Length: 116
Image 1 (cartoon, rainbow, N blue to C red):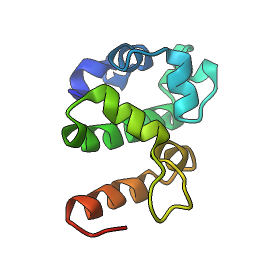
Image 2 (image 1 turned 45 degrees about the vertical axis):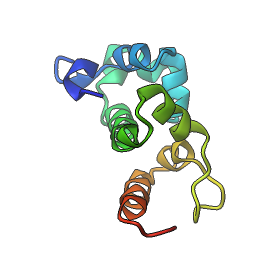
Image 3 (image 1 turned 90 degrees about the horizontal axis):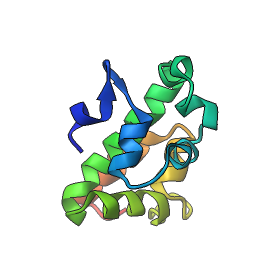
């Protein structure tokens, strides 16, 4: 994901992210653990919480996209693949809990050859 193409006026734009992932803004909101208003109302889109969650999701997907060779497959992995060492939770579930840094560290460890 080229970050600049998913932004509007310096903010992550849920609609542009949804278009790239061939889904809806509502699904993006659910994926990052936010309500529908968070991705529809301009003031809520620009809130720190909404922007942080969108950024974290994009960071994780960006980090694994080269491994899968496809943005859509990376998104599917993010939503559905249980991560070893996290009690079967997916990257999506961990990001929703505010644990994006742990997911990024996990990906770095796997990429470095450390088996989780």
